[in-house]
Amino acid sequence: MINQVAKEEEIAGIGVAIGGPLDWKTGIVSPLHQPEWRDVPLKKIMEDQFHCPCYLDVDTNVAAWGEYKNLTPRPRKLLYMTLSTGIGGGYIIDGKIYRGMKGAHPEIGHQTINFKCLQPERVMCECGAPDCLEALVSGNGILRIYGKTAEHLTDEEWNEVAYNLGQGLRNLATIYLPELIVLGGGIATGANDKLLKTAKKVMKSRLNIIPSPEVRISNLGYDTALIGAIHIAMDGIS
Image (cartoon, rainbow, N blue to C red):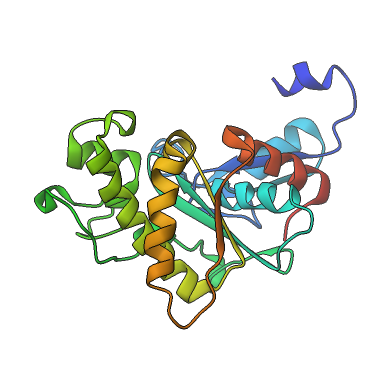
């Protein structure tokens, strides 16, 4: 596919958005959703094959970068959150991707929240914890709890999901103090106001001593990580 796109033109750079865990500096990847891939030197493989720099990072970091680069003016602190099969996120501070201890990727979907659920016995995160936000709001979590996909939820069930998301947003706003939280992924873009309106209301009602961030659905849809990958191919990554 790269050769087809290049059409024999020189390739100046390649950007890759991929599931973690990974080492973004060495480009060695072990994506959880690809069990056959463990300690794959993807950066080296691509650079040896195409003779150009290759930059890669966790897909939610790359998506956060795509959102950030698409904004004018750009906020000092932007938190991107994807609500999809699972929940992940990326945080941009002063034009740089935030990285945790030893370069680890923060897992915002695995925070504990005070949740509401009509069937609490079905709440179990794939990480093994009993009360993660991901277990309540992600596509897999919704399917496990309600026995159906998100598009078939009733208004009462959506209110429950939105309440739980609002609790998670409240935690993120309290701890990270972002100016803007952007929600992407199929659950967020598919539900839109059905999810966002109640979630924002819950978040704001519980933020008593800090400013409330702007929260909105991504304007980039499913192309967020793709656009981010284009930017890191052009600009590199740090």
